[in-house]
Image 1 (tube, rainbow, N blue to C red):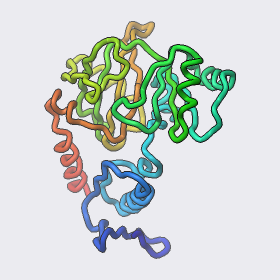
Image 2: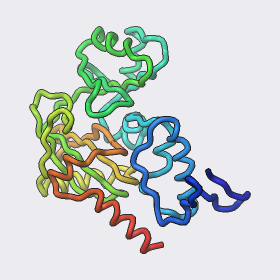
Image 3: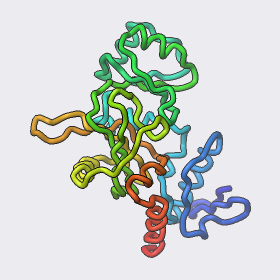
Length: 266
């Protein structure tokens, strides 16, 4: 329950306990209809000056990859992507071609569900016929259609409130299209040079509040000779087991240190 007189700081009650009397609140995953309620509760807790690890806005809708591919601050550093909304009538070839051209997406493409994890449903389409067959079967999930890019190396970086905790390189068969622990990719600690390069790259990207996992691709060289990086995906609920095993970074301990630092500042 959230209650407050007009103009006053709201009180958040869960099972009769006033959360506002606590020093902080950490919520990492919420499923189903409870997400909007959690978002409202976190907004109230933030207003009361409590430490909330993730912004309340993260819980105002169903979990989705769409922000990575639709927010201007992220699309400028990401791989060109188009979105096909669920629930609409199936698009014809001409309509789908227009959607792709507006987003500067060209074949071959990667197709992934907006709500999904561990590489489920991610596949490559080389022709319009393949793409039409793919998106026509989807009714209850937005689809992201993304330029297929040749990846020289792929990394998982983890940030906590804008601070880079570390970087792991994903090792997988060069021909695989999904590189994550669930599909058998191995993680190893990135070199000091790679960590510094990715630190510099992420410094110019907003949207780093909370605990965030970044899948980043090294795709070549800029005209200046600098490495070219692109954001594949921004994950606000990252799994960190493989990352932690590779880097030795205790992510949970880092979160608690952030919490303790907030308590000392407040």
